[in-house]
Length: 125
Image (tube, rainbow, N blue to C red; front, side):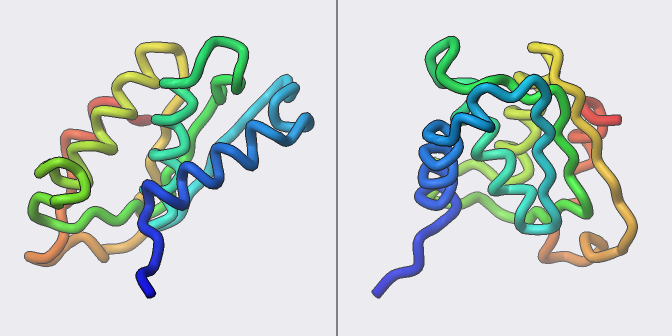
């Protein structure tokens, strides 16, 4: 049996949030993800950005705590790198007025298997 990936889990999370009136009608929405959870939060944000107007509120803030990005392209991302996809979504969200912050408190990305994703800092506080 296969383990669902970020896309499948993100879609499930989006549907759960969409069905929840407290989230759908929230005056303020703040998404937070830590490490690999940053990829989940970013995918949720991507689905929110793609949703029909009024289907889900746009978060006012997204916080990425010690985000982890592995190196190399991924087939499940159409050949893109994880950091590249996160960067693209962060840019789109920032253009729509979402505050994106990134907190780095460890050196976990300082190795050859990881992508430091320095370009993401252009779109985050």
